[in-house]
Image (tube, rainbow, N blue to C red; front, side, top):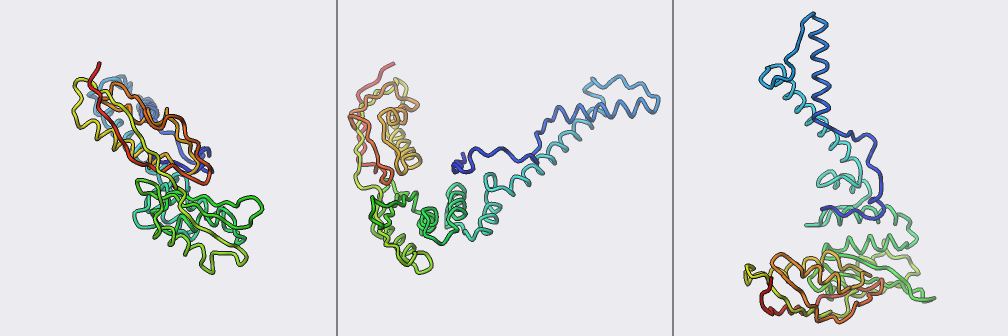
Length: 287
């Protein structure tokens, strides 16, 4: 499922995109066929007969018409950043001097294109620095660019795609090199790059399975939690107990008792929660 940047999420669909209905197209063709027979003085009264060859041909024609119109819709959508995918998105991105990184997803590339557009000013804008940092390596999941008080130092917090979210020294150095490049950094800017995920958060829960659930359910639940963490827990998102319980309440799980964390954890906008040790303890089976 595609996740659009906020700048694109609420845009209306292009007016050129047509709403297509097979039934509506078939009705139009049937009406035209009756008109042709009537004009020829022929009383055509078997249009509701499924075995009528004319009706079979109309159905085939209507289906082909729908396929053609859908292909036109898809071609139109490929012109727009919010809808383009694959090679079409690569072509749009190239117009803004943005090139897809190796194994980069459409969502990530689309976000970088938006930032590239916003950051076209050479005045060291936040969007420009974010765009450069995200383009430094495909392992950069998110970036926060900020200053503290009156200190002009530009801080860049890097959140990694790794399971923990912690950006290792190599990744931090790579982002730093991209931002410190002569054609990237403004002359008077002092840029400091660090990992956004600083402290691992341990997760502990007691789990009761349904009677028919296999033992492997616990491993599947942990895998789902880790995947959801990588997808949702980006910069600035608070870690709530309700979110954790929702991720643990998977198929085969009867009940979840979350032990740790004991309370919701507020995450500053320039940090992200790193996933620490996960302990899921089987307490038995209930129904």
